[in-house]
Amino acid sequence: LNKLLSEITPSSDENRRAQGIVDTMKEHLNQMIKDQTLPPISEEVITVVGSHYRNTDLSPLRHIDLFLNLDSSLVTIHEKGNTLNLVTKETVLSSCVDESLHLLPQKLVQTLKTIFMQHFPTKISHSEQTLKIQLEKERFEVRITPAFSWDHSFFIPQEKSELLWRRVSPFKEKETLDKVNRMHNGHIIPAIRCMKYWNEGRNNESFRNFHIEAIAYFIFEEIPTSTKDVLDTLRLYVDHMSRYIYSCPDPIGLDAPLNMYLSDNIDQWYLFMNRI
Image (cartoon, rainbow, N blue to C red; front, side):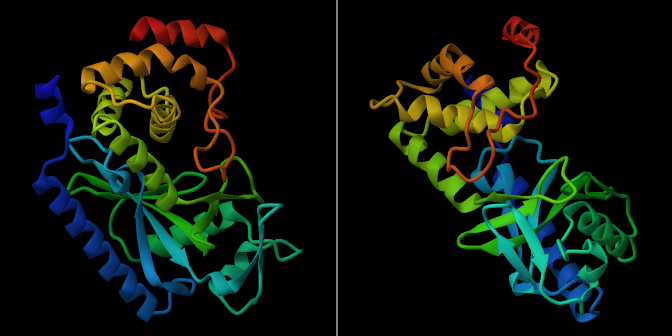
């Protein structure tokens, strides 16, 4: 197990390389801001998020997730309805609204893709939430999600919706995971890496990374005494994870349940158990 962990934990060189890519990306974005090709951006241009930020990513590092911090003064945020209204039409964002001035997340992502394709001579694709910039020379992917900062959290595009936005807080997510990791003498994050490694190699990436992490949080916050070691932690994870496969709330209570992307077909569960 220790040998596996040494192989799947990013080295300091990998982390420095990832930070260098982030710094280079920030330089490109700052130039785009000077050229006035981007919508207005907040002072903190980008925020590193995702597995790399939470220190649960795997080696070799193949991608990094960033929020592109759009200027929140441009929108009125309706927290209960998870909608955003554009305040002014004097920006690039004016092409991304409906008749009621609702800022449409999918149109925004598509507009940003068009802008980025003019500045990055590389392959750029997009999902419903995120731009994916392929850095072929580095064999690395930068995933950029537009975000509006609000009360120590962010609103980002919601999947499968032309109107709604999701509220997330990368800072609180990391804080809750770090807390339970400390409770168990640092065994949780290595165990999460092992589960992600299994999910990639044996489980066809059936589970999303943050779902795997949230399951760990809910299991081990209920266990008051520390696990013995990483192997003991993994045993407990596998023994108890069934409770949270199809019923896993957001650990910080801001977003929808994390299992929403999964099918309710119970056969999928038996298939999963056979892969353990």
